[in-house]
Every structure is written in structure tokens, then in C-alpha cells.
Length: 388
Image 1 (cartoon, rainbow, N blue to C red):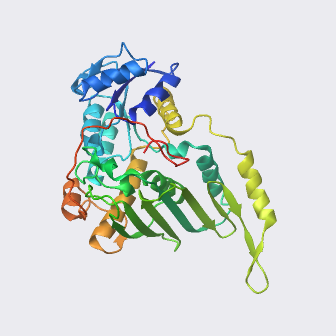
Image 2 (tube, rainbow, N blue to C red):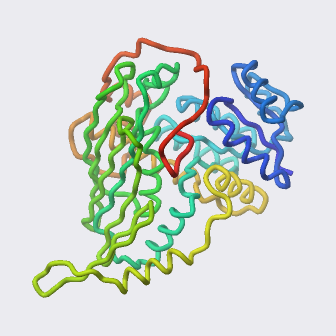
């Protein structure tokens, strides 16, 4: 039986608690930890964990030899320090997105995990949706040919008061705006499916949230070694929250939400519908198996099986780092107003948290700060991410 602790009992913690409870044959939540003991005890009551002890300090988790795995659900600025302490205490860690506040912190987490022979997984729950898994398999089989252009529309909407929460809306505590904390899921999918680019050119702005230092809208253009291009729009100002990721290949176009279109050339170069290619790819998509456990449920199951059987996790610390590297390149390009070449090295002006705080753009001063909201309900129009 895998014994689990959860650190940080805020709005995202129920996704972890409910998932662990679903796999009662594999694990048991034995500890909750939060600076707000009252809130943590209330949540323990709400989720049937009345007998589970609630701690205020992770030192008590580190000292408990029975705990095997810890979900880190705290604000992004705290991820690295907590993860490193837990790893050194011999615990496996599952870190909510983003992995850390800087590439330096990611490298420290990964190095510690390697030294301690522990598992690090970073939440990227969108990978565990059936449409994502199916599109990934179609790309891997190269049925659409070389990918020429990729398009990510990570469209969300948040009211101005969203950034009133004490840790949101600041570079120091949140680590960034919509690019880091909303589009992270789609950016992770892009680098998972299409690899890392060699160049990034980006702009960002704060168009509608005057209580935030960070961006609420960014647009990035990515160039790959083979000459192909991708574009990423990250937003919390889009009504309706339509989201999609599109891959335009040599032979066909596929996307999530699922859509297939293929063309062949007429004698004068204009397109004709390629029904045969469309039918072949669509039949494969429809016949691929569905994911048994989706979203957080799927990723947590993946981590539990890895601990039990010694197998690799789908989203490890290196994958978490690559996603943050791509986001960091977007921030660097937008802040320094130039094209950025990847990979980013240890001497880069955006490698450490301190250098990011020094060199990034600050849009507004945060003047309102609240400890919490009356409700933790997460409402969203997004089909594939119900937890941002």
C-alpha cells in the first residue's frame, strides 16, 4: 500500500484527493498539510478523511518513514523548496503545474531526484485525455506526413478579481501569468507531440487585469530545426474559452477537438478533397482505444503504477523542465524584444528566479490581496482542463 501526503489544501487539492480515493487498492491518503490548519481540517471532513492527521509543517512529513508519495499543491514559488526537502527525505513527489519558478529550480529538483533515486512527476493532465492520446499516436505513425505548422489556442477568461488572491498576479509568487499558469497544459502538449523548437519570438501584454504584474495575453511564434513553424496564443481575456491544438501536415490536418481534413493538388495547384486519406486516418482515430482513467485520475494512476512496479512515469521531471523552458523563452523574448535561441543555458538572463524578477516586464502594481475567496468552485468553458 502506497501512503500518500498532500501538501497545500487549496482549490486544486480535491482533484488529487478524489483520485487517490479512487485507487484505494493501491494507495491511502494518510496526511494533509497546509499553513491554514482550519481549512485543511474542514477539507478533511468534506472528503471523508476525518481520521487523517493535519500538519502545518512539511518537516513532519519528512520525518514520517511511512509516507511514500507527496502531492505538492502549493503556490508555484514554493514548489522547488518543498520538493527538494521531500526528495531528500526519500519521498516520491507529484508536483502541480508549473514544475517550479525557474529552470535553475527545475534542475535542482531533477538532480536531487536522481541522487535519491526518487520519482518526480509534474502534473500535465491534458495528456491523459482520450483525444490527446489518439492524436499523439496518429502523429507518431506519421500518417499526416511532416508537420508543417502547429497552432495552439489556449483561450481562457478570468475576471479582474481572480488576481486578488494573495499569491496570484505577481512574478515572485505566481511566476507568471496566463502563459505559465493556463497555457502551460497546451504548451506541454505541443512539446510532447512536436518536440522543442530552436527559436522563439514572442510579445505579451496585460490588457484587462490592472491588479496584476503579469501578462494576461501573449502570442509566440516558434521555429523548428526542420523549418516548420508553430504559434501559441495564451489568454485569460477570451470569452467562451474555446481551446484547440492543430497540426497541419504534408498530407492532412488533424486537431483536438478532433477534426480531419486532407487535400490533394489539382492540375493548377488548387486543392481537391482527399477522401481516402481522411477516411483512413479517421478510421484509425475512431478505433484507437479510449483512455481508461482521464485527467488527474489518469496521471495519478500512472504515478502509482510507476512506484509499485518501478516503471517510468509519462510526465517526468525532464518533461516538466522542457515545458517550463519553452515558457521561459516566451517570457525572455517578450521582455527583451528579440528572438530567443534554445536551449537556454545556465548563464542565461532568465535561468534563475532572481534574474527573471530583474529582467521581466511588470505591467501593473498589485494593490489588492485577499487570503481566500468565499468559494473555491472552478468554473470553466474549457473541455480538456477543468482545474486551472
